Structure formats: C-alpha cells, structure tokens
Image (cartoon, rainbow, N blue to C red; front, side):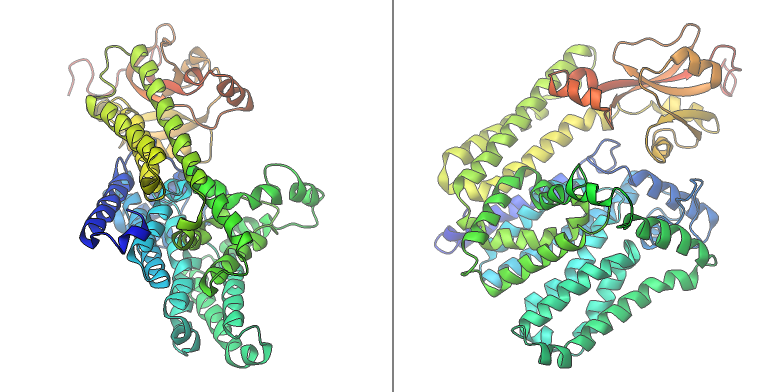
Length: 572
C-alpha cells in the first residue's frame, strides 16, 4: 500500500485500500459527534451560549450573551452558521452545531489530497497527505467541535491551494486575487481580521518567490494583487461593523480586548513570557509536532530530512515551508502563544508529509506505532478498572474489545512488516482515535446522560450546575433540555451538604462510590470525567493515580425541605 508500489501493483486494489482507509477516517470523525466527552476545547461552550441567545433574539445581530465582556468574542459567521444549522435553536443538539465543522475538515482533507496528487503526480501520495491531516490530533480535537477552527483552516488554505495547484496561471491571473480575497475574507469573518497579517505575508513571499525574488517586477505586477486581496478580505470582515447596530461594542470587546490585548510588548512580563514558560517562543516552535499528536515523530523526521535536503527541495516544498515559517514567526510576536494558532498551516504540513513520506526514516513511524499501542493498552487497563468498579453496568461490549485487539494487531503488523509501516501508520492512528472514542462512549451514551424520565421532570425547573470554565454550564442544556440552568463555581472536595443549604435543586460531581448528603434526595445520576486538572491532580496522575483523578459520577440532588417537583407524588 505504499506510494511506491501504487505504480507497480494493481491500481484497483490500491484505490480500494485507500478508499477503505478514507471511509474509516470519515467514520472516526462522525462517531459520537454529539457526545459531551469528545476531544475538544472549552471555547465551544461560550460559542454555543452566544449562538443560542442570538437565535432566541430572532436577529442575526447584535450578538447576544449573558457573560460579561464575551458577547463579541469572535466575528459572527460561526454563530450565524450555528443559528442556521439548528434552525434558530429549534434543533438544539450538539450534532446540529458540530456537523458543519466536520464537513469543513473533510473538505480541507480533500484539498490536501488534490494538491498532494497534483504536486507528486501520484494519487497514492494524495491519499497519504489526506490521511496524515486527518490523523493529526489537532485536526481530530479542533476539527470536530463547534469552533472557529474548521472553517478558518479551510478558507485560509484555499488561497495557497489555488496558487500551488494552478501555479503560473494563478500567479499571473488578474482575476484570481478576487477569489483569494473572498476566501480570506470569509476566513476573517469566522476568526479575526488579525489573520490577514500572516496570510498576507505568506502570499507576498509566494508571489516574490514566483518572481525569483526580483523586487521590480514584484512591485510592478504583484503588489496591487496583494493589496486587492487585503481590501476585499477586510471589506468582507467590515460588514460586521456595517450590519451590527452596536459597532462601538465590537471595537471595544473584539478589536481592543480580544485582539490588541494579546499583543502588549510594553508589558513588564513580555520578554519573560517570550523566553520562558508554557507560552514561550520555544514551546511555540514545537507547535507543529505537538499539533501532529501521535504523528509528531514522523513530522520530526520530515523536518530533519528537509534541513538535510534543503538544497534539493522542490519549489513547491520550499513554498510550503515558507508558509509554515511565516505562521510561526508572526504568532511568536503576541504575548499569548499557543500551538493552536498554527492550525491554519497544518494542511500545508500534511501536503509536505505527502511529498516526503517515503524519505522519512522508518524508525520515526515505529515510534508512533509503539506510542499508539501503549495508548490502547492504557485504555484497556482503564476499561477493566472502570468495569470492575461498576460490576452491574455493561460498559464495554465485545465489539469494543475486538476494536482494541484489531488496533493492537494492526499496529504490531505495521511495526513488523516494512511494506506496511509507512502506509499503515496514519491508519493505525485513526484506529487509536476510534478506540479512544469507543472508550469514552459510555460517558456519552446512556450512562453518561440523565434518564429520559429525569430530563422530563426537570423541564422548567431551576437547576444549579457546576462549572470550572467560561460558560461550561451551557453544556447542561444538552443534558437537561428545557431546564432553567444556573451555574455555580465548582470547587475541589465540594461539600454537598453546604450546597444543599444554598440550592434547592443542584448537580454535584463526586468520586465514584460517594453518597449524597443526609436527607437529600437523588433524582438522577450519570458517569462523568474530570477535566481541567489541578497541578496536584496532574502530579498524582503522573504517579499512577489515573483512575482516582479521572472518573467521577454526577448526582442530581433535591435539597431537604424543597417542595416536590410538578408531576411528583402521583400528580400530572
């Protein structure tokens, strides 16, 4: 199944095998898409909050929020997307919010496939790039939830795809800049006008390189094209100010606070953060391998190969590396640095993987396969522990254990057989993703949700729920649809009796096996996972106390003395 054998073997067989791999990837990305516990980012909850309230207002603008200073945290296109796909909130489910993001992610993978095929003239390498992109953990984590990243990555990759796919025709065209401006503008209206800086610099370097770095023809023939891209994209973004009845709020909340606030070189801690800590430039420099997740080892190998072969790199490879470096340099300047800011360049990295996959030393792929096997083994251990703690519940059916076994056997086979190592690594990673999703399925299924009867009884009731991050309480609107959700700040070692004195009806997360407070009535319970661990909890996990710091149960409690809910005691 390697790209080398694609040309010599039976093409139909290879197309079939790659097609099956793509079907696996599509299944992995849609599996449990409506689950509470898919890998994601905490920004999904405030985005859902803004979308729900804006839909309830009956207008696309202004954006609505009950959270202070978080109403205009992002441009409106993501929220408009959510309003449309949920039919103005009538179909308020995670599935309806998330599926457009998966479609965007799969479309980006399609662009990677087409560009990899075009540049290499081998369809097998196109498949390698697409599967690598979908096997990046950053794609799996940020390319499925209700976030700005899936559309941002797609629309900002479109200009580079167009220029590299059609090359001279696109670079010389007087009409292509119009298309590029529209694509970039849509991306800005999803994320931020600030993205025009790295995109504009990346395009400028590409046009300059196309002119062999001759400034005179670049200034004469290309600068106006870049200016047109900037004007069109900013014009599309500025529609937000034109259409919103409160443009001054956008300026204060989004431009000044959300964007300018991340760039403060005059602050006393700027240099320290630049050089040291989790937000340092050195951590950002590792952003591409970190985003690759289990494929970090082949990505390291690809970078080493690129440095060694820098004089022999093709023109397309040089241009793609330029784009990656521009993103890295630009996003090293703000005082807040994160590998997430590099996501828009990950499709380009996947194309580079497609072009250089066969040159990467086999050892790097084996390291990925070994790490994946260790992850699956850890999932099996945690599954046994959890099932042993809850003997009455059928948490993991036979199909789950078969999946873990198939993943391990396939990974071992890819380690053992050189012909399968490179071709099978991305497939093995996708199987690890599926194993992780299957492990989390009980937390997303019946055991991870309140019963239909409990949900029915909570309709219209005021329920206080815990949260430890901005708008995390918004997730309970999917768990208890129709309830009037109120949030309280969650504390570790929460005193249930104290909560019962404050709230008539509340949810609380406690360790497995814990009991409710004296006199309290448990109306429902569900399995849950601990997130946002404290340094002490992370240290305990590193010392082997994984189970104790990962699994919880959540109790829905009615305090003593509270009047019975409507419908209780035999009343309709």
